[in-house]
Image 1 (cartoon, rainbow, N blue to C red):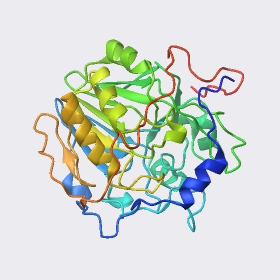
Image 2 (tube, rainbow, N blue to C red; image 1 turned 180 degrees about the horizontal axis):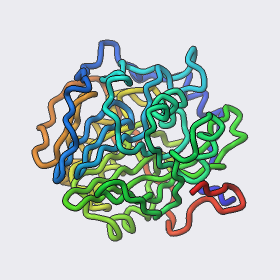
Image 3 (tube, helix red, strand yellow; image 1 turned 90 degrees about the horizontal axis):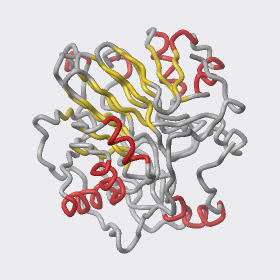
Length: 347
């Protein structure tokens, strides 16, 4: 199998991890907009609303269809709940209060995106899942009915209600083993959602790559883009995009309103916890990209986006000039990173 990402030196990563100087976790409570099931009406035709629930988890209502992205309700993004990166705040809505989505989209199998306990709860409700190639086998091993799981490769399209969901290319990696014995044995992707009137793009976890142009030309323009902006470092520039390249990607993909995700929830890198959003706002102002920064639990409508209000503390942060995050390489995207010899399609 072709490996499209490099493995940074573990010694260098550990050295930087244990000698962090930035404030990587909040010292005060993060302001959260608490939600209940009664806050959400039925999805409406012609409407688009995104509720950010923290990290990359979001509830999306688009053209009468309700979609849940990368649901993680666990206290820690970790294989165990007594150690590992801990949430900065409780989920804005309890899982048993969450209105049932029509479908759950999973971008890849990392612990901060695929939470076993959460998907088991959702599966017991009979909810459908769309996952990248190979991830369906994990669901089967967890006792989830394979009839509820559809696997997709890049550019596959699935119709859910009036919305066409397309699995889009991304430059990342996969695996859940602490020893990395299962590295890249499953696929990863982003998703484009296109209804009769509204559209949205979720990049998943990705580094910068040439595919953003192709995605924009094939599926764009979009009204809104959810794109990761946190957990970056110069040691892994090809697997996490970082703030400035994230803004650039939104422009390249014709992405409309930018919603920064993958930040402000877990301590997954060495940068300060508020640095990603500070750098996003600086880069977006330079590049003319509109941005909304919802509080956890807040809903955004791209037709009437809220003005940016600083709900995070004003902490020291490194600029792009001080800590540049620039992809080392970029690749064409039409063929995926996996082939049939390494995973089986579950249909």
